Length: 127
Image (cartoon, rainbow, N blue to C red):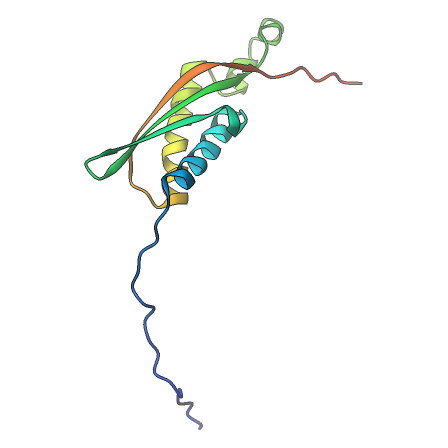
């Protein structure tokens, strides 16, 4: 039976801090919000504020929707694409809070989603 002895004692990693700048946090949250709302990150605006040590996030963004023509032709499309505008905004709000917290490690207390317009999903023609 052989025994292996380490030549150096094992040490715990040095304690330290990881700082995420406001600009980096802004971009992460904008990307998460853009994905949740189905729009480009460049059309999303984020405001961050401190609330007793936690972040409050305000998202201003359009929301991707299907055209009214498609809604008239297929009444079930609203349910299949995530529900009404308010339902989709509520789901996005929850998703933004969860994913942004997971990715950044920040304690996010509140996410407010303010819809600034719509981004109509273009029709794709089938050939």
